[in-house]
Image (cartoon, rainbow, N blue to C red; front, top):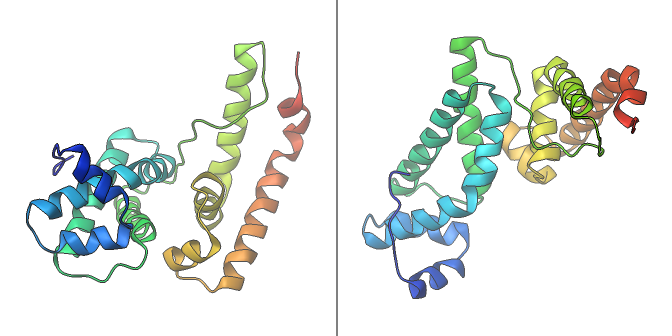
Length: 199
């Protein structure tokens, strides 16, 4: 990443005790401390942000670009003294906006699914078949339902975070998650025996 630096263990320890929001305030300074604070935020938030980008886009290069661009835009916002109340949610929102822009440009409507917990199978072919079933079901969901499942089930975001990212009311978040799960359940229903089968 662009701004990664090495720093001693004592500084690392001090930054680990700070919240993301406190670190974001330090970034506004623009000095060495700002770069170190950014490194800590990057370290904490990059796995979840990358997961979001990879599951929105099948194309690994596009995912990488959006992932990197999200942190750059985040850094720029901090430097402009943008008030941060939820750094993780703000990063996802940046990535979401960049993803929507990219989808409008490329007309891509895919979700890349990996690292899903499946039942244990002795036969490697069965694992591939079941991953394909779940991947196809998720891709078949309307975008608004697919995205909310990614945020809730794969990124384990709170209802409040999802509300802020998607700009929905709390009740609308609950309704949409409920409908999304029902639609996914309906899509997977014909394959229930296959998904549960063990040799």
